[in-house]
Image 1 (spheres, rainbow, N blue to C red):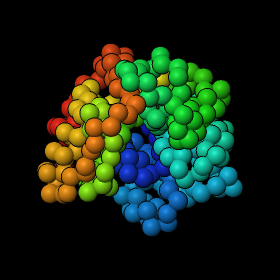
Image 2 (spheres, helix red, strand yellow; image 1 turned 90 degrees about the vertical axis):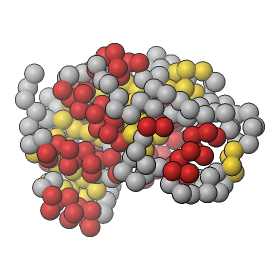
Image 3 (cartoon, rainbow, N blue to C red; image 1 turned 180 degrees about the vertical axis):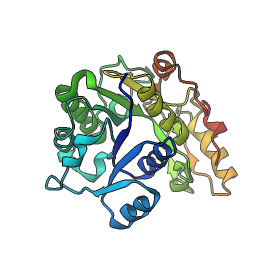
Image 4 (cartoon, rainbow, N blue to C red; image 1 turned 180 degrees about the horizontal axis):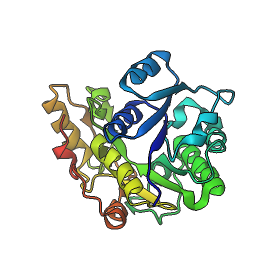
Length: 263
């Protein structure tokens, strides 16, 4: 396997910035993008080669020098142009560059069952459809040079969904949750690179799926917040399987149960 020396991270937000620092510590040359000049300055001071990226007109010629590219831009920032913009970005990479696309488990339909990477039904949410369309675009361009990581709800580094739910009413008290801790997001990305595991689609999610009502009440108490109120209304749900990530990558989740997430 070719030695990895340079990694590009398109989208240095909550996950991307932490990932950039992780690879700086491993001694790689790290390139990154952000839409915010102040964020670019912060990461530049830490040693990341930062570029501003807002639209199709921005310079991306620097991508030709990276060995690995991590695409980590959320669809909310681009709307319907998201799949096209992902395809636009990878047209600038070198012919031997491999790509990790940080996707989302929102691509899966809610059919009250366990879903895995072989599940073909696409969710009907706008986000799920947009992300899935981006996956298809990238697959058509990159083939076996692409690995898709479908991440569940992201938690860690002072980010937790209960902070936005406090005191509000929600249905689905007994609905199972699908979450992943930041450290495991980074661990999975690194495992793909270390194992040269390309041409795959892999879920990232904690293996335990506690009920929403119980879990968010517990998290709110731990954070000294007013707990959200869940009703017993029936809702549709899915349970994300993480078996492939464990079996294919040999990855052991540091936080396999959301009740073990540090808050």
